[in-house]
Image (tube, rainbow, N blue to C red):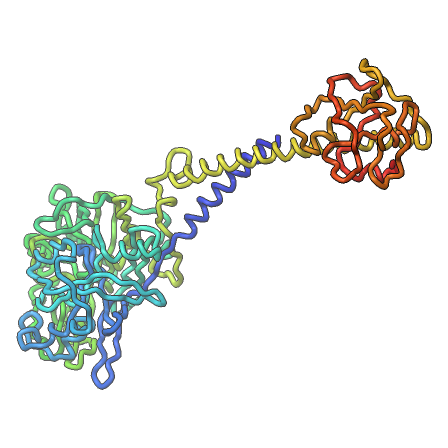
Length: 594
């Protein structure tokens, strides 16, 4: 019974350790949304993303990217020449450039390292961008600081703010995990909304996901892609099996047009660095034609040159005059089983851009549909932040999966959950235990066996102690009843010797020459003092004398005055079992026996 209890205790301790190890795995949650960087004496930087401080340099606004493994920083060289002070071929001011780039750092303030220290970022190169340098940087997230290698963007027009690389081999995620700041190579993304009518902030959970950002507890599961989409690197690919547009044509009526469905579905890339839907040339043309059919010839899409004197549009969509009455919703069907509606207030909005001071403003003369005005680069379609405003994204690289769920648009709190290995369902066996828990339970089982052995040893020693104590009390009781009387010792077959049992005393004294079954035989009437020095013994110790006169002496009783010859031993049965001395020195005197 005791053994079973101890074993169960060991198993419980092991399981508790496993559960605590899961609970101790960390997540980091970063705010995502409008990002403002004060610049004393200059216009503030107004951008979008996550504000992160670069030690020894400035704060920057980072935008998550799922196609880059490394993190890239925007440098001041991006706004240092007339050639770079342009967007879509239209000149912009230095203030507009700084806001467009989400802040700038100077490479001279960083410790540059060989560019070969960076990983593979073929998705960057394929978009006609280039990284001209690298540096070891220390990033600060709240009170946490950590160092990593980052690329330096010094040239190129096909990007805006700094990139927070979250692709399959993300240096950022790996560094955080190695530092123990997160428990897994995973992240959960709620991009919030940049809608004018219903804006809301978002969050990035590193090492897990935010349960509060989901409208339900279930995800739609997808495998992380191992191949390119067209010629573009993209680990997060889904297939749009149907796309339709619902246009409100009257107070109570709508007109629905299918852009494509069924066999004509397209594979797309989920990339939060982009704002807009980016469609293949054919799909974009079909959608344009449908808009003209519904709204009539009055819908005329305009290019950036027609409004550039007012503001800089960083990612031009389908822009049209605000006088056109157009109210539409997009409906996406993913892999035939997930339907997402992008409402009109997300799909279309007043034109927004940067004024000459780098401040984000609205131009009420124009409206903009959140569909990129040109065909998708590399003909690889993209679902950007406009799509993700309605969808929560969770990516678990350790499981080789990513997940989509309808977003909770009314969430006001957060509930981060770690996706560490001990909570990962892909690592859970049919018994409900993870590999980590199994190992810990095995250790706990060994611990239980060890505790059982220790307990058995203690019980054995305690049992022996109790037996010896019982024998001592029995002897005391016998001696108490004979106090003051004489005893007639029993003689052994060895003539002239008294037989006295002293096995316990021999064991206590540790005399290796004695066996626990041996019987000490003391000479009778040998004329030697039979009591310790000062015991008041003496006399002859003859047969029939008081017990005190017959007390045997031991060679280990140093200084006792015992001078008898070495005693002989025999395995003779004790005739009187009450002649057994207590194994504990001093107990005899406590009983009044001298």
